[in-house]
Length: 289
Image (cartoon, rainbow, N blue to C red; front, side, top):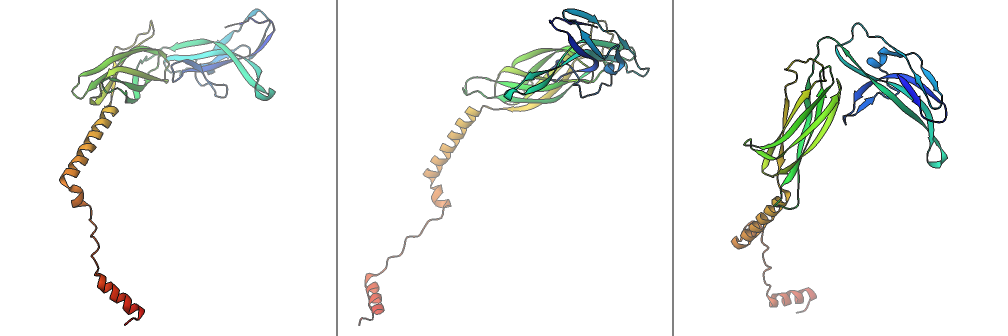
């Protein structure tokens, strides 16, 4: 591995080998400094753990690779990283410690039983509403691609929406993905356009794995993988209009049929009182004869 200092001052670097993985967004990443490498990163031993690189100079860094006898077949990925410890100012004139890292990727394939296999998990779908009841909406489909094999895999995929009769609704959404590392998971989210709100719909997800160039993999492993998820698709605007019509019809019927008078209790009017009796009662109370 070679390290080049393009700056005008010498750099003091720390050299490490670190295991790699695929992030949920599909990017290549290395373990953070606080996590210990247990795969290829642990098998690589740089000749020097620290290195001073003069300004505008390139320095070669030899390393030794020791593969365990019980290493699993398949792809193992790591990075040899050069780290410069520094600091940057923050609010209040305080200094924050910052690690500047750069490195080279290392790919190793151990011979043996090669398995290239993907699965689909964490599937979900929802209908995205539109205000205009005469326009079609869209559907958002989320899922996770999981590499359960032992080699890195790329591939292509398609998402289709179908109704309960199996008819396609909307335009299919296609996508590609690359280098999902073994034991890694990558999240995908796609929008399928022109989806009509016709009740219960099904999102069909299909991905086709592609092995790296020069790797011999069983044809059964590279067959398309499929997964489906059901979701409701109703127009909220049309539903509110329908509910308004239903309530208006009910109130009209209740008024015309007298339903309110039959259901709700009626108050009885007070009985009239004879005025002469009231006068007599008052006289008796006052003691007048």
